[in-house]
Image 1: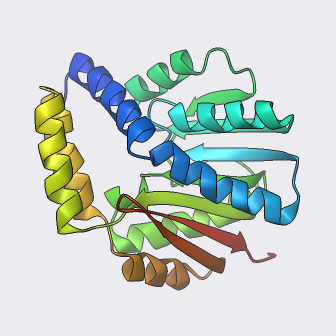
Image 2 (image 1 turned 90 degrees about the vertical axis):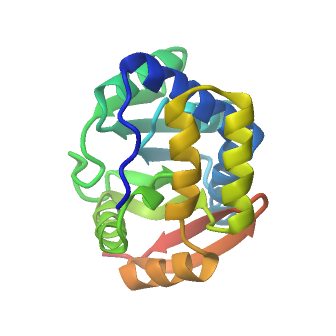
Length: 225
C-alpha cells in the first residue's frame, strides 16, 4: 500500500479543512446522507443511533445531526477516529451538537457490545484498507450494528484521478491534500469490485448505487444474528 503524506499538526488541520470543503462541494456529505435517508425511509425509522467510523473532522455526523433536527428525529451519534488530532478537531467541530459524542479508538475494535447501534456509517474510509481488511471491518461493524451498515466512498476512474489532481493543485498548497486526494482515488474500487467485496463479507443484503461524480453509496441490511 502506498504511504500517505506524513504531516505536521498544522498541515493536518488544514488538510481536514480542505476535506470538509470537498465533502461539501463534491458530494461526500450528500452521498452518505442519501444512502442513510433511503434506509431510514424504507424502514420508517424516526429515531435511531449511529456509529460513525473514521469520522475525520466530524462533518459527516454533524450533517446527519442537522438533517435529523430538521426532520424532528431523535438521534444519538457516536463518532470515532484513531487519530488524536482528528478527534480533537471533530470534538471542536461538533461542539454545538450534544447528540454527538467523539471517541478515540480503532475502527476495527470499537469498544461496544453486540448490537449497540442501529446503523454504522463509514464515509470515504474503506478505500484506505486492503480488501481482506475491508471484509474484516465490515464483519466487526455488523457485530455492533443492529439494522444496517451505510457506506459512501470513491469510485476509481481515470477522470476522477486526473480531475482531483488538477483541482487540488489549483485550490491549495497543502502537500497532504495534493498528495493524498489523488492517492485516495487510485486506492478506490470500481462499482463491481465494491459490490463483490460487500458480498464476500456476507453480513447482509447489499444495495449499491453509483452517484456522480465518481462516488457510490451502499446500504447493507444486516442479517439477524
